[in-house]
Length: 321
Image 1 (cartoon, helix red, strand yellow):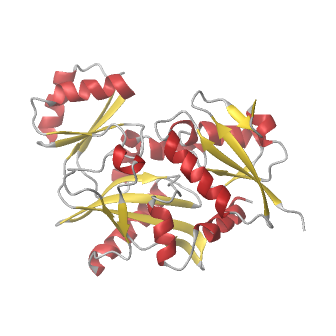
Image 2: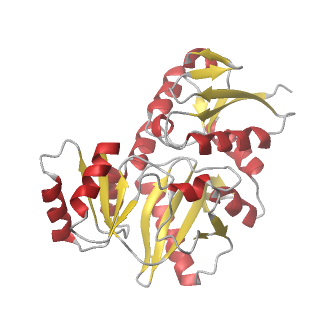
């Protein structure tokens, strides 16, 4: 029987380049050689594509590929750019299409869409460099809606990259300005005290239209006030699954994760991140293309239900085709 030719995308020009290399390697290592002919499609930090170790254009790299699995994180891998390339080439791929992926990555637009869908989320105000307000006016607008401390996130980054904690209103204008200068957009959120959780889901899995994996408690160094980008890159994040959240909290997390996946129009799989407070879980963001490397949450959640990355990949290849 002919093997399915699977192109695995990895690398890319985003801040999550190293994590993408690890996810790409995990995907390639998990696919059985007797069933799949795996093609390593590497995208360098300049955005140039490579196949068989040689620079090439996307069309040539994708020629004779049956289906694509993306190990790209952030940037062009999640903002719709790569999805549009695949759509134009007529290549099947696992994961969300261009528009839902782009919406999920854009924290400002995703926050509005998810709130409109009735999801409980932190109070937040978003800004871009196109705003006519100066940073002092931005800070006063935030303060009129909710008080400090504040979490400031770039509007288009993943893996906690570029997040800062601001303790007072006095620091807020400069912090907003720094984030806008570095990333072009900023989402200012209220800082919530609680435990972090993450919930993965897979479509049409084990007889369920949207199978939700058990919520995992996110554990990172105790002295850190929030999850840093460096915690991910240094492998300092652990995931407790099964978790010690109450049954009520777990049900609320599962329901919210399902609702978020549907509200953003995502496909095949996703992962939702939360803060669990005394008032219940607050949705932080949704990842259309969660990591699959050894330190990522998704493999741990799969293992907790007796599955594996290999089983998951075989399933989403079927969904893609």
